[in-house]
Length: 163
Image 1: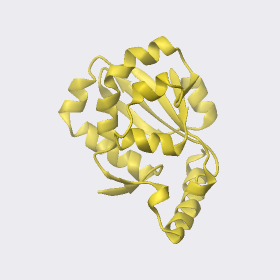
Image 2: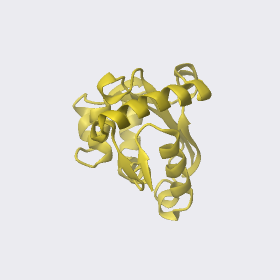
Image 3: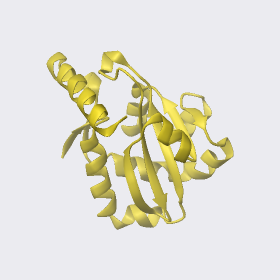
Image 4: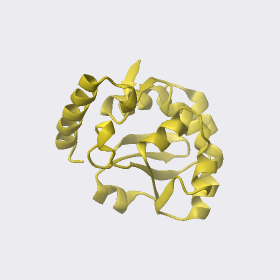
């Protein structure tokens, strides 16, 4: 399935794939966390304000994968990590490694402890695999018309989801 980055469809399809793939659950069976990822605003990508999406995982079981409001993320997340959409793209395309870029400060820790992030880091590749089972299209790969359509769509789903 083709999905555009930072859409509910991407997170919904990633959730379905994760739940249908026992190897993800098995690889993450020692992970229990509520982790959020901030995608910093980038108007040239049609991302006019930050997005926060996150996962709630209990012993490898994915309870939730969706967008969160700023308030909800700060209240519930054990960790909130932030980066530009360009940085997340390199991570999701496996051109960069999460741990390396976190250590270099390209991914910022907005909430939580660095020690906790380092404990989760060995599981990052598995979670990235789960998020990239779909054919992911990024905003810098869209035509100007598609980018404008994405921007309008993002306004609609942000309003509908209260994010």
